[in-house]
Length: 88
Image (cartoon, rainbow, N blue to C red; front, side, top):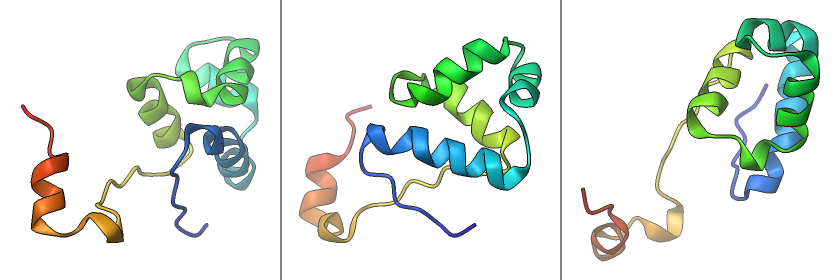
């Protein structure tokens, strides 16, 4: 599968479905690996925008996908990077 840019949370359900189908896994198989019921996973997939980061990363791992974070083309200037940096 090609790389996809995800800019909004409402893009996640369709992407997770596509990744699941490409991997040849059923919702029940993913649910079993996550330790939840098929119904719970189905709800997570439909409402992926409300899924926590740890759970999303677990699902992506099962689907054989990685999350890669990178600056957008518009925000690569040093000034934008300083402004948008988390203060940790």
